[in-house]
Image 1 (cartoon, rainbow, N blue to C red):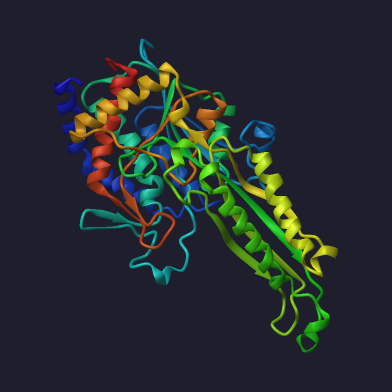
Image 2 (image 1 turned 60 degrees about the horizontal axis):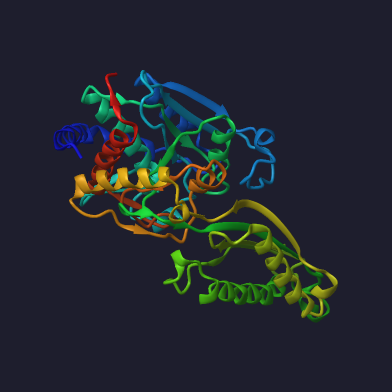
Length: 430
């Protein structure tokens, strides 16, 4: 790595880091939960347009992506699900092209009184920025943007086309990233700065969301013995699903990336609703369930086993055997993805470029590890044949209370990203 270039880009990131921190705070202040991302996307589109990029903003059309590999089912048409993509067009085109991808949507904040401070009023304390989405993953969006700014501040530009993507739907379907592929945005490699502590993600799990819908037989609670309690009927089904979870996690079923993990796959009963009146035996119950799968574990086979487990458990219940549960899939329908299994020369070169950039900034080897979550990397890696590097700053309590991102880690990732772009794309005069 050119030490002079490394120093120049590091100085440029440092010089703009107060601006980057202010940008991140302003973006985090947008409560961009599902369906409410438009304000944050307007903020992103304006920031990109101000820098002179060609900006493409569009509402995701379910009809356009229906039938594509990797599509996750949605219960109803999208309303105001807007993607923003900006493009840098190289003059020479002599380098390798790149997608810088990130998502602007965040998960719900939960009860506000369980936060130390308001979730959408970001604050800085002890080197951390606190706020919902500060870590997952608005910090990553800022590192992508300000890495490009650092190149420009040095009088340089990528010598290949670079696409900056700010997508929605990552937290529930991934259909935002899929819509970018459908719209024709491809490249030689992808970088997604998800907050995994400056570690290159070697593999990620797939995720399936589904609902189990139960119907009971209502009666006055005084005569509960003559009814059928739909909420209580869910209990043996949950137990059966946890037994399946244990089987899937057995050593014989783990791929190499996860061989050392006793419990990589997690079943989560994320939400339960049922009943209509405290003194009536509940006539209905709905479970919202999340189950993970390993890379290479087929979704259709996993779904078939899930359905078999639920129905076998239901047949053991005197009431449910005559009122079998309905199983409905919605949201995540995601396969696992393992960068470690990509033996292409392109993948090796992309990893090598990131390794060199990380080493130049930190003086250390690039850590590598699998994760027990999913990201949008799967779309590019599995369905576009594009090696996808997931590498971002250190964050804590993502999806929890008091989410926060380490600002010095963000600074290092921004520097490494600028160097990675330089090494991967090459450089030209702007």
